[in-house]
Length: 396
Image (cartoon, rainbow, N blue to C red; front, top):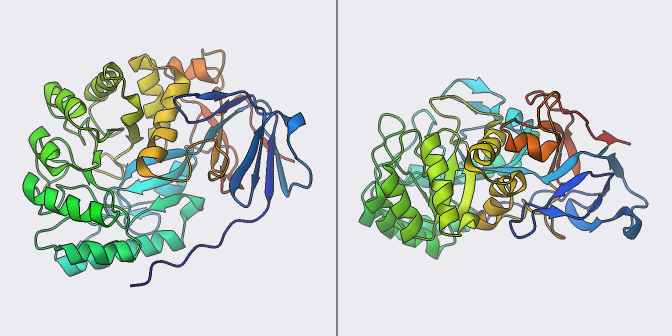
């Protein structure tokens, strides 16, 4: 089966000047000594001091006016359906609103909220391929939605995973939301998925909606999925000793979500820190869900984990950018040559008590978003959702 057609490549040179703070997204060096960045055809080609870079003949020049440049935020756990609409809350424009919260990439944990979602193997495969095709062809607000994440059902066989992989499907939906809930049965399908290059996420904790079920530590460990989906519950968390066990006994991604238990979120973060494995921590919203959608959910998670988890703000931003990019094998999320030119411009919110962006986040405030750039192109100016930033960038 032929894979999806390649999207049209972005064109042009973008130069960003007068950057006050450049956040790299990388834990090993979260703040870069740079004030200028150059992108060509949607990819980062250079960054550093303006005097050392070729900034001539730009198609677009952005004056950051001293604001911070951060890799575009990544939401590791969303539940899209079709287009910018969620039937769970009968709400539209949630993806575009999330882009106004700095999110430039989203990862589907399954198109589970589709009314009448097929539960037979052929229907599961067909929906996964359809969702992958639709979101690839129509990026809402420019947001890169990695969708087409099948919810595992009984009766699926290895050939189903081979077919999906060949068609471009790269993700499994949250294991445990469908008929497959037993650890051994899930492990067989996780192994098939991994054989064909498909990454897996497993539901963790109590049931999220009627029809789902409890997935405890024993099932998670036996299934062996790549990502411990919402380790802090979605919404109901496992006991803290089980969360510690998961962190200690496997190397899977530790996904902390907005729509979960905040005490458990902080416990998971502190456990990862004690294990010296904070590179495993990634962030999601787990929306749309019963509690609605959270356009500022990732920014809220960064602020919450920094202020209550005693984590430097520049490190907390890595959880929402570079950590997720590396765990999910994405070409964004880091300020590196060759990476996608996806950025969010941030500054301290007006009248925050923090003297600068990082201090304001460490005090628990949400920063203001002044502009979002995806593939080197401006997707939005000042956010309609965040508190107003002190300063905003300008297209010259």
